[in-house]
Length: 172
Length: 323
Image 1 (tube, rainbow over the protein chains, first blue to last red):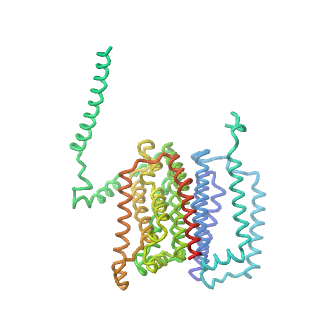
Image 2: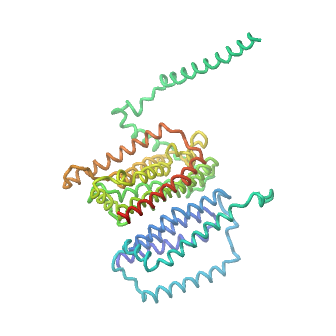
Image 3: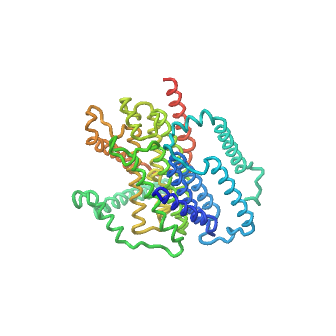
C-alpha cells in the first residue's frame, strides 16, 4: 500500500468518527466543534485529491462563515452548557438511517459509474481552468445558483423583519 | 441676592479648580511613584521585557474553572494560534524564500485567517461566564462583518494582478514598477488595513475585549499559558496580516534600484521593514483612538467598507477590461 492510500484511509476513518460525533453528541456546541473537524478533514480529502480550490472554499465558506453563524445563533438564542436532552431525536432515527443509506447508495452509484471505479489524478486542478469553465460552459447553472442565493437572502430578511403593526406583546 | 450668587459661583469655581489640581496631582503622583521603566529602560533598553512577560505567564497557574466545558475551553486558543501561524506559510520573503508558493496563495491566506473566529467564539461560550459570552458574541458579529471587506479588498488586487499566488502578485508589481497601493489599489489598501485591524480586535475595534466593561471579553476566564497563547496570537496575527498587506499592496520583498540577483539578501529585510512600518502605524492608531461603539462599528463595516470595496472591484474590473 502506498503512503498516499494510508493517509487517505486514515483521514477517512477520522472523518467518519468526527461525523458520527456530530450526530450522536447531546451537547450542541460539541456537535458544532465536531462539525468543524469533519469539514476540515473533508477539506484534507479534497487536498489529497489535488482539488485545492474546493478544499479552500470548504474552509472559507463552511468553517469560516457557516459554522461561525451556527455558533453565533446558538449563543444569542440559548447557550446551555452541558447536555441537552432535546437533541436526542429518537423518533426519526429509523427514517434518518434509511435516508442516509439511500444517499450513500446513490453517491456510490454515481461515483462508480462516473469514474468507472477508480480515481485517477493526472494533474492538479487549475483555478484558471475552473474559472473559465464556470463562466462559459456552466455559466447558466452558475447564475441560477446566485439567483437562488439572492432569493434565500430576501426570504431571510422578510422572515426576520416584520412590520411593527404585526408584532404584538405575546410574540416578544 | 448677589452675594448668594457670588458665594455659589465661588464654591462652584473652587470645587472645579480643586478637581483640576487634584487630577494633575493624581496623574503626576502616579507617574512619579509608579514610574514604569519596564519596556523603556530595564534590561538592554527594555528589549528583554517580552522574555520576562512570557516567563511570568508560563509560571502562573493555568486555572480552569469548575463550570467550564473542559475540552472546548482547553482547545479554544489552539484555533487562534494555528490560524495565525499557518497564514505565514504563503508569505514570500523572496521568490524562492517561501514555505510554499500556492497557486491560490491569497485565497489560502483568507481561508485560514477566518479560522480564528471559531477559537474566539468557543472560548467565549465555554467559559460559562456572561462577560465571556458577551465578548464572544461581539467578536463574532465583528469578525463576520469585517471578513467581507477584507476579502473584497483583496479581490481588487487579484483582478489587477491576474493571479492569486503571492509571489505572482509581487512579480506583477515589479512589472508595473509601482506597488499596487500607489497604482490603483489605494482604496483597497485602506479598506484592507481597517478590516485587518478589526480582525485582530485591536483598538479602536476592541469592543469584544473592552476591558472597562467586559473585564477581558472572551479571554476573561483564561490564565497562565492559555491566556499567553491568546495574547501572543494577537501580535502574531498582527505581524502576519501586516506582512500579507505589504506583500499585496507595497511590493513585498521587492526594492527598486537594486539588482534582482541579490533578492535573497535584501528581500527578507525589505519585507520585514515594510511590515514593521505598517505595524508601527497600527501601534500609533491603538494609542491615539478611542473605542468604536457597537453600532458605529457595524455601520462602518456594512454601510461604508463593503459598498466601498464592491465599488473598488467594479472600477478595477472595468479598467482592467478597458485598458
